[in-house]
Image (cartoon, rainbow over all chains, first blue to last red; front, top):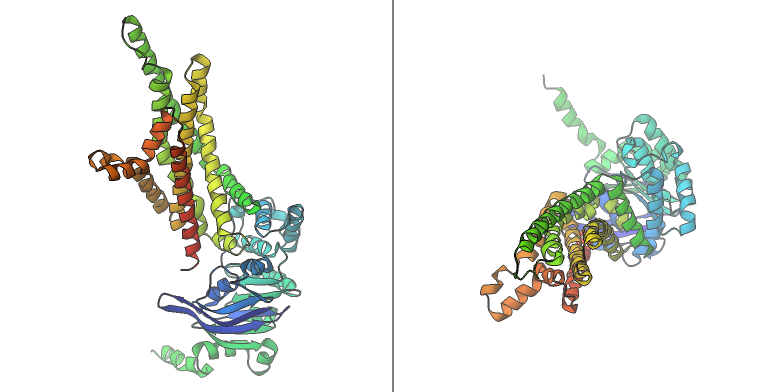
Length: 251
Length: 256
């Protein structure tokens, strides 16, 4: 379970995240939506313990990310926006290295790496250098490294960005499979992705939570797109229309 | 300890799967060989000349003073330039890539990262100097230089190189730009090298401090064959200081 309460992060005079609170239950997958610069990555980086918050708390399975940082790190698998690959390593040796860093016992590292390779369908490229892989494969290796220590929580920062449609479908299917037994937070720009994978949606805009809701409740009334635009523009859906009509009526 | 080894091992492998290690090792050995060859040639010329003269004091004309010590000094200058280039990647590269996020979201202490990266740099430098041992070894094979003095000199060079690695790691931890890391390391090392220059004209206290801070003074002592605790203390505290500063710099990155 992930509990974020009153999270605030400021960089100098800029407030990136402002009093954000939300909760993701164990086994639930939450979609984290918001425009660029809304504070998604900052929030995720704080949850993973990469950087401390200015104010507020985050607990993962009851452990505070700041006070029990190592307990949290052991429970979290994190895929940053760019997969954190060492380009001169082969996929297999890279995964084994990550396994060591994550604290997997020595005699289980090889099998953990093999399991992650299998889970992310990387068998064909296991012996190739990370630097020689296509973007889709790099993303999958990124997922494999997030999974290697069998974390209960997965934090995925835009896992399908920059992939071609076939790769997107593949990665989505993989995430859906992984999400069945894990708590997942997934940030994205792609709304249908959330509807397909997640049970819950959290919309963040200008550092504040605009909406926290179960997908089921949401879809009943309005489509996710409508909700998103409504909350991100801060007004009703109609707000975007006059602009469009002036643009169209130029000549 | 296991994390230290994992990080050190990855960094060492990264250097050896790329051409970096081979270029550095070849370049350093080649330059040292060139110095060695020329000093030895000059030594032979001098011996030939002086052997024709009688009654001259030629005790200064020995392998240690005429070949090994100058060789060590020249190697020191090469190390001063090469080591910042070896260490520039250590932190800068990770900071520029997402792997920094991987390290900081893994259960690894900053101290373990600092030590691991330092050991990786130290390992390459150890190998460089081990290869350069071939030159004194040749002298021992064909001549009879003094062992103690040679060993003390090499130890001095090694300690200096280890301190240089720590300084290079520090500047690398400050920036994600490898060129800035290299140049700042070069500046720090050169300053440590020439810091005692104004010592002669300075007053007693200042002279003491400047002389103590100078890498050259401590290295020169060891190259002369004297092994003293104060020189050890100097080099070890230099290493400890830079590792501590690296630790602080890396830790502070997360608070920005």
